Length: 418
Image 1 (spheres, rainbow, N blue to C red):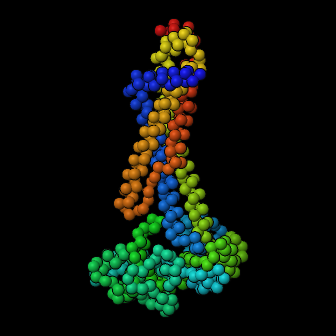
Image 2 (cartoon, rainbow, N blue to C red):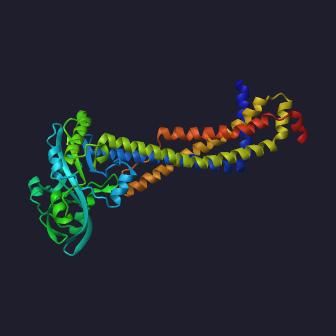
Image 3 (cartoon, rainbow, N blue to C red):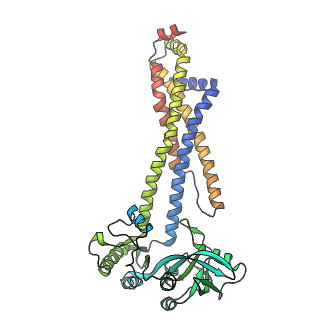
């Protein structure tokens, strides 16, 4: 039995060697398909790992409170579209943060909102993102570290002080080689003193923190934006094991403060970092599955090519099949020989596709590093198993029927055709 297997493999390899041009052309479709599967799966895993790592930089002790359109889910397209189309939720206030701070497991909080304005210094203008936040922001976000000067205080926030802390890119764009500490810049016709510079941070979750200007949230509200509400409140808890209970307490508190006892009336969402990561994980899993389904089309095309080639091989070798049967070969021996040809062909395509996928991953990782993203696309075990599984399945599925047809040829009919 073992010798028959070895013979079938040898005959399959001999035929593939004797038809090198046909073999290479057939391999191309399989290689492209497997390579696509490898790159798509590695990209999905790499981007997901990158974003999850960025979330981890904030810590697992964070609860995020954001405004949302009533009667919608916080993560729904209806909420996103509603706010993008100009629906203003004005009920979340800095005072809500003060009430939340009184909860037993809350360590600190930072209310915040954002705006965009032209910032000027000595004739140099730059449109910048103004990041309004409470004075406790460095306690909430461990990545916000002051490298020069200091961060503004709570008293400066409450007194609407015109002070700012800038990111490294803002410093380089406006001040070049001079120290910005103590210098005044103009924002919307008002003078703001630079009191601090944050250390280089780079891009986090595809958002460049070095291009931000940090400003006391109440100053931004009242002196620049002309509003009295915030978009979000970030809360840091003392005991992470009680974070779900704390999130529930915050929800109950805001329901009472906003007078929204029914779920459909709620104009806010409360989400822990673990919940946010779970949503991201689910989204990426769905996207990866959809992309794999699309890339599988190229494998189907390659599989159809293999089926056609196998049919041609059966027709060309009808006499050989009849002769082998006449001298004692069984139908299952013929079936194995042709099936092994298809499997070997797709396996070779799988190996080449995995190697090319690995090289493309390296190239993409290098490009991302040049762009400032610490995103690595690596060849994971999951990717390799997918590539091998897809290639083997393609060989078996598309190679079986032609092999079966070959095994059913009558020796007399096959010899007569010659």
